[in-house]
Length: 196
Image: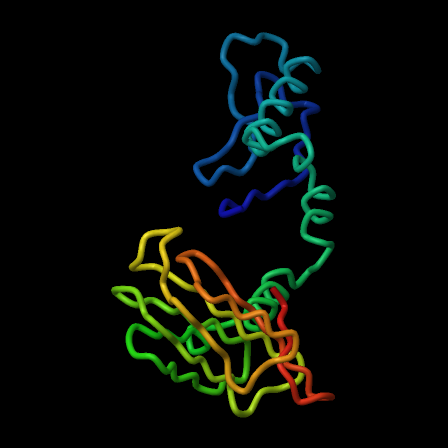
């Protein structure tokens, strides 16, 4: 929330002709209530408090309209922003995205994180050889996405191969725009395995 609300104790006793209101900063205060006669009734006070609480909630959904529910939704994490920032830092960044637009042999640079390789030629490639990174780490994902400039469902590459030959190789003879081929490296065998 961007608005800070100060909540304090307001003594309604001995405060004739007063109603609960807010000052210029949105803080609660007692204001003169002309025409109320003997002062503020309990019903008027409760109505004013209910209205102030409703305004604070501003139509929040029932599952998130208390501080306890908001805290639970954030995992009761007092450092929620730092936790999310750290988690996002572990995701693939722009440096791990590489693009191939022409030629029959792709060039893949090594990376310290996941690699997303986009095969995005302006027209159909007859063949394409894609080398795996030369210094992979255990569990490193390598995902190749085909298409972009070529309409979805149309051929991008007539024949594609990976080097060195991966385990469980099921390289398709033709790859269509919108298709993805993914591998994961296993250091125990020094091999790339087809993920999907």
